[in-house]
Length: 445
Image (cartoon, helix red, strand yellow):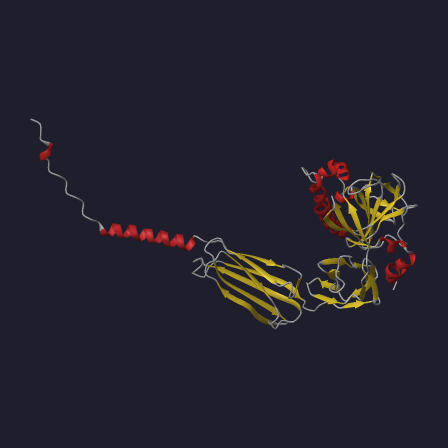
């Protein structure tokens, strides 16, 4: 006879074991505690700038702090000098991951000279013993807050608008940068073997004589700077004006060439795009090319003028452009146009080095020579280029042939003299007396 399973007696339930439960909870607490205590064992990071060298008001000590784990907790910076210890800063943080701290030295009591620094950073970690992970960095830097002294050697010199002059000076210490600043432009001073600096300073044609105020600048290796007068007496000068009619025939003849500069452009809009925008781009490039100049002069004579050439376009000519009787543009012609015969030989105006040879926007086929001390010459609208970048040339050496490329209405040479990338009056540089008085003689003093 089969037994009825429903009549079987059930097993008694196991009694609640509180001790086992408490042990389990305690194990969880221990694991969690160990995790919290050990989860961040990585020390914070410190990046110091400058890590070596000099400090000044313009070049302070910058600390970049990083902790990707529990976050930053504290910072302490100690300076030691002449046997004395100074706490420069002591800061507490609230767990941020990054922080940049800039330390200046105006009111720290530190004197100029060698300073030893200790930088200590802690994070929010519980390890070890609740104090957080610690990083310490030691470094030695030199504090220099004294600006350099400038001694101007050259005499007070008159400079007419569109002209230039050499100034000569000395600086009491090594410089990171020196030269003349004016209206956002910078004209470098070049240190010579005898310790003097030579700087050729232009007076741009577009500068306002009433407000143009060049300053001779010297910045030492610590970033301290001094500004003094460069000793220039600025004189205004008037320039010619011209009216230029832009014809449909001219635009049609240049369309294919200009479309390489402005794809898709056509008609008068294409002309204006080249005459305005490409012109501005070219001038910007000339300022950049000035940085490639030699620190020593490569010439000792006036610029050579294109032989048997007639002047067909004056320097700094204020040109109004008209189309169908309507004034459409105004530009200043920066350079002198010279014409003789078609495809005439173009000669280097002075010894130099080729820093550009190719097609150059508004100027078409173009060669640019560097003659040192920021002085460069530009040869534009050429039909043929006979030199390459990096090549050295002598005065009178043929560098190509004249042409009608770029913004040109006929075969001629567009000739420019540039100082620090700024166009100056070429005729001055072709005159022996002017060159001696304003450029070469001051270099010998």
